[in-house]
Length: 324
Image (spheres, rainbow, N blue to C red):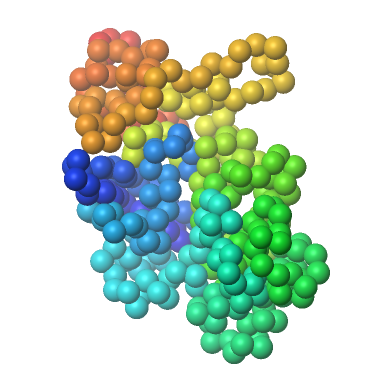
């Protein structure tokens, strides 16, 4: 049985303008010890998927339907007592910007100790020792000194390490990393990713890596979900997605990556803008931006098609000629 099972999840935000269908019927499994990458442009539904699992949606957000099972336990509709036990203890999250995630008026130590005491039975002294232990684990130098400092006294990379330490302090089964390296330069990013790989191997947790950077996915992930307009357009192993992309959106993402071979030539960005989630089309949501779009793409949304045992995509281009 998979550690995390998500089935036909629909999450919407109810605004004055109407219902924004941010996540529109996605399903996936996460195995123990595996790293799942969720990629796509801003607004594709990546972060909302993670927040749905954690049940930390904004006030206007609501899981409309679907199932989220953690180790066989249903989370959709679960009470606050159950969710409090899940958050931090079983599922932890690293948010995008460590500076806004950490309280600037409290020391690093106070914030780490508070998180540890909230989710464990450790007393203040034990929590302090655990916090120092976690800072050492994420390679923060002079952890005793850092515990007494404020977030503004740390670099961006160091603050991100503190956030990782906080997320791992209670040894969760699943770590959700929501674009953890977005605001960091490439050298710090490489160090953070290497750190996450090492920790993942040491404690055997599963990771959901949310990113728009396919380079991060290639470096870290076992399986990949490509999201667009709140749905899954392609899903498979990292090798399958990178070497055999079968959805036109995925191919567009691949073409927009700078490589050694593309040096001196213009990148090929995906034309147009993401679809308006308030007015979803009948057909494929990517069709207005797709160079290979056919008549049927406008009329009807393609069903998920199994390419092979490890790969599936929802694109009419995978159907033989004669579809028009």
